[in-house]
Length: 469
Image (cartoon, rainbow, N blue to C red; front, side, top):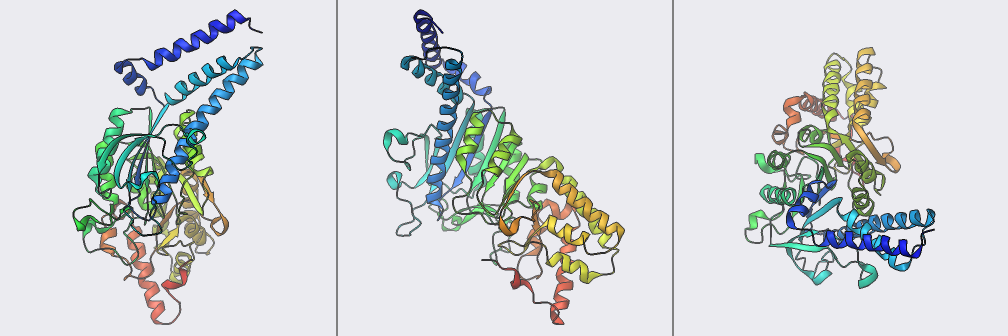
């Protein structure tokens, strides 16, 4: 047990270390920032009917940081007691202060959030002063115990941008560039938060323009001035532009519906090491942020952070994919397509294609279940082997996977699998990298034609049978 004098010396040293940290000059602060484990950037497009969940998720982030600090402090206090130290209230407070300083030095979470002027809509969130426009925050620990308001944003607002069109890639690029310049870290993640529709704008809403294949981040208000900017969103091509400018990150996450696709894994393989997203629609509350943030401030590796994100999720599907293995998936897919080209049984191929697990947008099918159907179809040794190899490539690329209920057989990555040629603009698909890099679009065209021929002869029911509630 420490004597009283030793306790006082220990407490004094802790106090001095905290004081030094609080009075450190700008240059040392910048150097410390370079040593941080994580920078997490959340591009939160809440200028829409998801505004309520944006407020909730920011509070979850604050809770996650507080949890990391409390966990560190409690561990140190228990360790001191286990060593025989008599921890006084004053000493305990000093330990808590030091733990807070140490934990917050490990990571930074920044959020650019655009809120909605929803008026009388029941989806309009009126909390936190009901401000509209776009602001940037640095996440700080939750203060609910002090304020008594669990939905109050306690984080530090560092910039008020006014009304911003979050569907403009230049604004996403500006946010990420600003964050990386001011809060540099060893590991970097960017999360695109909002509605998502896979590679396209949405069912029956694709425009004739090549830039019309919108993907994620629906900004209902646009820039607040030009009506043509309303409902803007980011396309896969625009995402490439963003990351060509800001550089490759460790994680790109989509807290949005229908985004974990082979098209995206191929498109973003040079933009991020890990891709996190859902094959199916997400519930309104999306990801569970408190364990994600707590893990980042506790020094998790990129793969560990991806696993925490997936394992803490509550919804139909979520997966994390190693993009370095995306080429293995598409190469295996092309090898299977080549073997299928030798098959004389188009009916069995079409059935395997049709029977793949479908999602809310029924033009999207689970790639693993398609390969599994082909493997079981009895189409010959070479086809069966190629299908098995595709399944292996998918399993090898998936770092973590969460599924619930009827989705338990999904493999973690979907792909475009339409059955009618009048639902989506095929020309827009040709703009994606996977179109030029694989033969999948030719396969899709063939299956649509075979299906259309069978429909004409009355052999199949057709497209609408797959719509889900």
